[in-house]
Length: 107
Image (cartoon, helix red, strand yellow):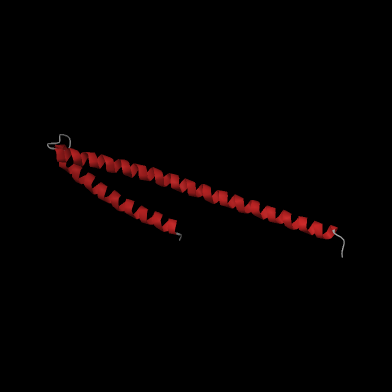
């Protein structure tokens, strides 16, 4: 695996762990019922805001991941097309060299 692939896998693992922790936190908060609906102090408000921020970050990461996969697919496609074009150019060059060699008088 390339370094990029390893990094992406590590990032995926981290996101999975974060998702599990967020799901657990959400479950615990849902179990608490109305305490979150009417925060009683600043700390509760901070926790709710933090959860919203984490949720937004998770959503942004998922979007970024989809875009990264799309970019990688486009890079592979472009690379394949460039290799094909290079083979065609090499083939034409070889044919031209053969024509020149056949057309030039022997010395």
